[in-house]
Image (cartoon, rainbow, N blue to C red; front, side, top):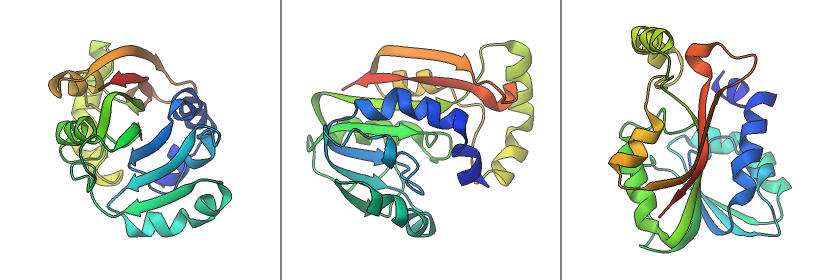
Length: 194
């Protein structure tokens, strides 16, 4: 269900805004079924190391992994534990994953640790809407939503998470995704600087 929802055309348009900007050695938190893989620019990417706790999702990703010309590696852990050395990656990608990671600030701190100084984190996430009425409903249904949507929180303040982790956001854009209910459709994307 999550793979189908996050693999819709609207979400692919959002991925196109951020994923092709990654370069060099890339760490991707929440690689899942590999929905981002075809969005990377193969001329810019040396390899992608995907972090995800779901071995089943990685199995489902194999067709996409085989379709890209760069090396893709899987590490079966949550994003708040990245088994990479400090300053070892050129950039990072995280799309539609900060909502499910139990400790998203820890995950961002891990990205800050493994991405080289001056590197970027490219992200697109759904999260807490700016309108009081929408926010009220997000907070109200979040406990049920988490149970039916694989631990997804629809009310996380994405920009606030980056701020708490001490990561600057020189590029930040927001909008409600078209053809998506407002409670699940507020999208935040851009580039964070490490």
